[in-house]
Length: 345
Image 1 (spheres, rainbow, N blue to C red):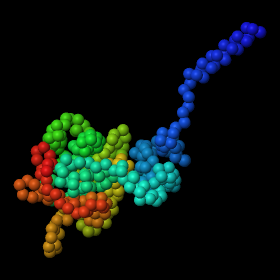
Image 2 (image 1 turned 90 degrees about the horizontal axis):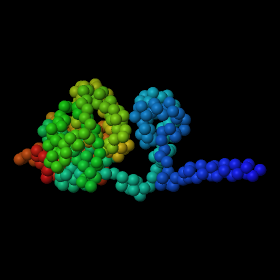
Image 3 (image 1 turned 135 degrees about the horizontal axis):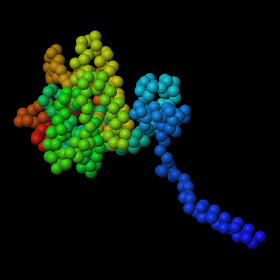
Image 4 (image 1 turned 45 degrees about the horizontal axis):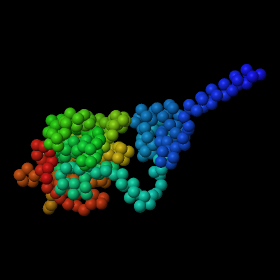
């Protein structure tokens, strides 16, 4: 009997030691609540989740802002299934209802501002170029649109403490105007390592409007694991203007352009990023007074843009930037210079 009691006691001691080695389960606090993923959506199994990820949808917000038809096409799902997934994502992401003005103001604190490093331009834009916004820069050839794109691409890689986003840039080049040598000059102007800056700028050449639109989907796919803070399209309208000629094709062109702008704005919202698009111009021969220069894209682009900047040349190598449209800032102008080291006051 004594031997059996000793064996029983030994087993209990071993069991207690095993229990003590196991870590205690800690319930997550409200601040440490587990992140909700697409696998947690009702009715989304492993196969559907994999389809969504392959199509570039790896978080709830990306799904919540989609339309059922678009999601069905891109993820190869039935439209009824896509509708249920979007509805569930909206509820779990909590974006479907109204919010109070003070709550919206608090949410606006997430918006970041990218410094151009030109005081006059930053003052014109209320502190810099905003994230979650689509900024259109238009002007005649040689007005400096591409220069602004190159400069902001460099500035985006700067630390937050220096007015940058410490983020990666995706650059869609439609006119073969991107030059890594220019990035090198601008990076050296700030004392930065050109190779480190260039490694964070991802460039693709768009050969037609359809390819240009597909590159937005490629950005969604490639952006996993990257801190995407800026998307540049230089220029937005070049291919659309060349391929859709005449009034008979105008409606089709505007529909495609509207879809493209919507996809770009989604990227800005999802990544808390800045979208900068450059735009070509044309002259209105029937203009009796004032500046006859008008941007391409019509009302579709005008409504889609959060901020619109009109650039033009001045004397002695100076440039003038005019804020034409903004939801919260007054119209105004500023003067700056384009130097070998980049944009300067």
